[in-house]
Image (spheres, rainbow, N blue to C red):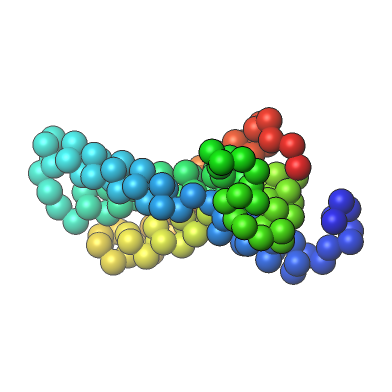
Length: 160
């Protein structure tokens, strides 16, 4: 698995998705919920509550959720108890974590794409924003998530 030419593109996509699933998603949900709640509270104090504010707060929460979960995936979780196998418990998970450490940008695309997709749904369901402007806004948010997760993985000191 040391050479990308040995692995098909379809297999690389499956590895990227598998790597992303090994992120700390419970912690990410807590951070996203807290961040979205703070954004909602601050917006309600200054502007009052409306569907636009709710949609914006959900976007903030989703961005935090996907950033924390994705960053944890490219970092391999760094469990307190020792090696990644202590957390995952399976040898194939260790290989997936090594692949993720070697290919952080491929893993980062997964939470970025999920961010963009869920953000489009949130904005279409809760606001009267046009479809194409909603897609554009969601794409740049997904790119931010991809960039942050990719940079965290790229500049981490974790060895594969």
